[in-house]
Image (cartoon, rainbow, N blue to C red; front, side):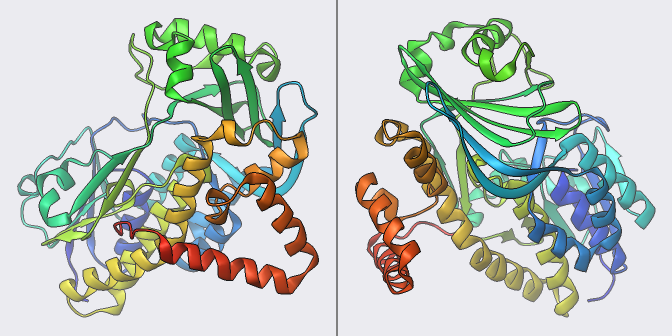
Length: 402
């Protein structure tokens, strides 16, 4: 494709990574980020080895630097109050979001990408004469909202309450502590991302949130209450709210965003603006970076922009389908913790490890555990189980493709 003028709106991992790849193809690229440089929301982000292999192919320089800063963990720990913790082997790694953005910004500048911070964009017309606008401006994308009928945007809300926090307690395993309270179970998703810090996401049912009167507490009081609940896990360390949190505690409900189309004219969606996957599967950043690689590949492989954008959407939607369904299943599992929590420690950990399964939602937990045990011992039954899952998928009402 001939040289284009490309504007990326959003200086997160998707926009910066795409800017690097597009610039390496010879395009003129400008990235607009509404926040000041060095300011970001969130704590650590989770990666997996397969993403690094993809980065090796597309941008080996970035892959090398990311590896240097990676914080590795080699197991999951499921820790239910009053029971012995269960360790499950599982290798992965995380990295400080601020560090990742700095790596990508430095790489983008070296590649010749123009970076403009404190440069909010709400209308493509503000960008002047450009050939392609990449909307990587997050789950609440302003550019997507301007043409949501063309994109075919659907937003649905999951029911659980969650809050994204940080702590100086370093978790060297990806840890899931479950704490019982008079109002119901409360749990956290905890993982270290550097030698001094961890992400600490607290989640619970809305009834539990109200029962603990967390809906009535300001940010500081919320931190102290959650520190009390997770005192055993925090071991004297404090919890920190996200950057920019005000007096009201920043509780959230997960927004599931899907889009029937991924472009409206020259505006193309990327990352959370195009699709979201529940945080419990740790795939958001990986999928955003894969979007960047996918669009860059499409621009290289096609001679005109409409064909490239069509190929980008078709390929990425197909690649995302399984991950999106697994994320929906995982979110539903955490919305139904009481269905599983009374099992013994090992059984509960097995059920949590299987939370991405569609089959688990349709049969009793005890029956699932029996089938899982039989499948491990009998390959033929394992194949039969996979056929049963495919059959159940066929019975579900189709969900929109993001």
